[in-house]
Image 1 (cartoon, helix red, strand yellow):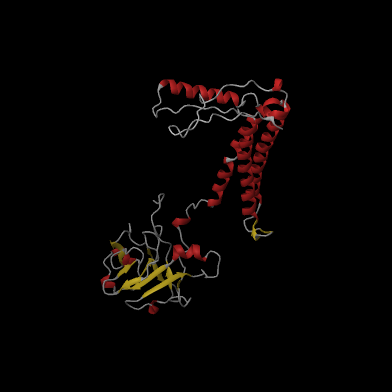
Image 2 (tube, helix red, strand yellow):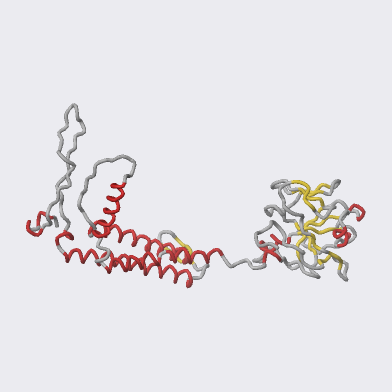
Length: 352
């Protein structure tokens, strides 16, 4: 319905918002001001019933946004992580991901659509031209900006259209809860898991290659052997998590070549066991030099001296490799005499 279909007496009074005198293009002034086109009033400007309908549409969109946000929270809490659904034509996808994406998309879309519909149907629709001015903002311009802002706030009818105002505030207040709920997807707090491994008193050292328990005679001088705790199987669900902390590096030295007193006490007949995880960024250490007893991390070349408490002698690593105290059990197999005395791997902010 156009303003041309409304009786002239019902139309709002016209206001003069022209640029000034309308110019005519010629050779001297090829870009003359054409002036503003005739203004056509919207049906909402002249019919309060139409304005009420637009108000209800905007409020409905904001309300749908609130319901979608609540649906997002319910989906996050109620749908299992491993549940799959079939959605044509996408195929089988995660039910939780589909529900979260759908509800969050609807919530954000409805807020945007409500704001656009509000601006296009209920806010002021008058064309206003303003002359260009210098970049500086003198006091009279600042006063005009403040006045324009107050006028815009008045024309938005935010104070008069309480239904729109309340539903908009509700939608904007609930949408951020979606982001808060996503924080739960970061997983549970680690607690003290980073401080402990599967190693404990009586745990046998198992060769990573043969999957057999190690005896002292299996480790010869100058060799490098990798071990894991007895009972940790590669097909188990927690294998990757546990081996990332419990991977062990075993080297046999001549007892007379061990310089560190504690290292000698925690060894068995020259066999020393150190964490395989580099203390820089957690790469696995795998390069051993027999003559110097140095081990090298291949990622950033951090070098540790296994004959002197695995202290750092080169590279960015911040501290020595943790040593595991070992011995033999009643059947002659190498075993741990406890867990590492300090957390393995890189330092973290809450590390003591």
